[in-house]
Image (cartoon, rainbow, N blue to C red; front, side, top):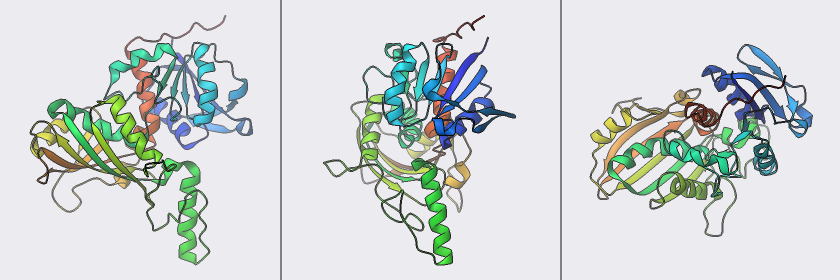
Length: 344
């Protein structure tokens, strides 16, 4: 008997991607139920070659549902995830609502799969921030080999990280520039078309943004609390795919060739690192792909045991939907959940 899976926020960018990935990867689901707010009731979404009609989250009974992939935003998750968990359904949440709760495991399956066992305290598992997820897929095998002391990362994050509104704004502004119409900034704080904005999420008292703080806190929770992390997060006029320039300092010596070999063998990583024109990956090639791509691996002579690398991934997939489905797969593979018996 397969599992019954609900997707909350099924009409959003990530929710639709979750439906695609569940079907693509052959997740053992006997039934998949798309959920959203009342205004989306009856909306049709695709699941493989099937069309499903959206049901209302507020009135849905989770008592016979095994897994809920939650992608409806932090406020909805804060309200609904505990209720769903109490009905015996495991929530895999894509928002930031539960990431820093000590009783909720924060999981990237390639990084800290064993931590998933802690989900039974609340029946909630958190998905990390999209920029953190791809970075840690690349950092975990290097940390195991040579122990990372410090990370300096600059991100180049696509507008899809801000949802459909962000993608629409880039499209609308770009068109307006070409036809000499007025350019309006609604979703972003400044014009995003043909521009970059060093501001993602709200500002904190120390001058960093919350997006930057998330990368620090999540790296420490998932990888190693002793690692020092500093981040600068930038929104760029790219539709899909986050890029990161990462500088690493290690406790032990590690060469670029050694790092390249380690990453080639690491789960979830794909090294494309030719020192020639086009011998690296950009967001355009990463869109629609599952891998975390790593390029431009080179030694940093300005610090002891230093490396630089370039990391690119589809933020809607590994940064969100794919990681959530991989967490669900991990629950099944480790026999941590069993399908509920269907009512007669």
